[in-house]
Image: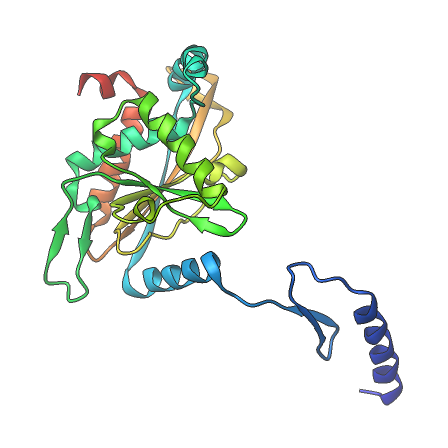
Length: 265
């Protein structure tokens, strides 16, 4: 490196740090290339980072994807939206996905379980506390709705709305964050389509929801516009094999494509 170039660059960098503003409340300093901001990594983000590291280090995670044709479900949601609004409920696809997941978990209990670190015992949870990955200013939080199998779509929607609001306002109770058995991550709410979500360890599975999009598809011998919901199931391959995961995900899709099945069962 020529000394003149290094000198010119250093002068330019000093001028930058003199005029720079911290983005995240950290301290500004200089490295050999320019201005950097040093921020203490703590709080919710640090806790979640440790959980993600633990999840990936202790599980053999695989992601399987599918799409659900939710055209019929969309009509039901729009039809009942006025009634939901009257009751102070924001009715989203998430409530239907939680309900479908619970019903599928009842048929495939290994996805609602914990595998101990020695791989000698499996703890099957016979209750269904469904976690909801919530994006907040402080970082990702995963409160859960307790006994989701006992609640109607409207009850789930109302509780989801309340949990999300409390998470964003940092008003969750400790009990809201403990006891989860399976998690749903609705990244589609902010525009995502496909993803590979990470399990909320020690849970062994997580279901990701992408954004519902209208797309041309072959349907009953014709090309028509349908509403499709991308789904991604990440699971611990130590406990759950691909065939079982596929059957679980197919059942969730069946419930979402034919909501009457959720009533009949």
